[in-house]
Image (cartoon, rainbow, N blue to C red; front, side):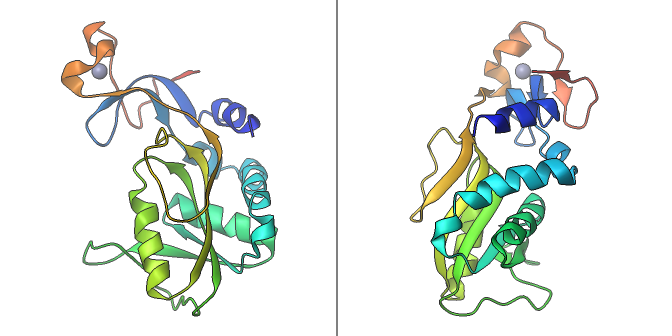
Length: 193
Ligand SMILES: [Zn+2]
């Protein structure tokens, strides 16, 4: 779905500049995914596209990691006509857990969804959680894959689109060398791509 890049750009969810990421690294692209997730009409449209990719997988339950994945799981589940739950960080900081009385029955056909695949860490945590309930993971879906194909799963993985950003260690950042002002996350000094 090429339109997703357009939607990301037009909603300022995909920004170009010189950014300091939460990892401390610098990048020429920054994703403010909540610029899409905060817009129900837009989010609904993108989630429907995501849901359609898994329409033939007889999904029975959609699971997403907090926070963005919560919204996506809900919208995708609505499209597929099934339930959605979300995986929250464990209080001991070790992986993900189900809270709020959520449960997954053994053998349930689960679709895992999230917004942007980077390192895959939160998805791996959700996979581990879902497997602990002996459920049947039928797919993993993301809006964007920015892992550059580096992250692989043992389950069918589909993303609406793939995009790569340049990421550098601060001391190797060519944008720093050019003297381009560094934008901290949350700053308003963004320009559209
Ligand atoms: Zn830099």
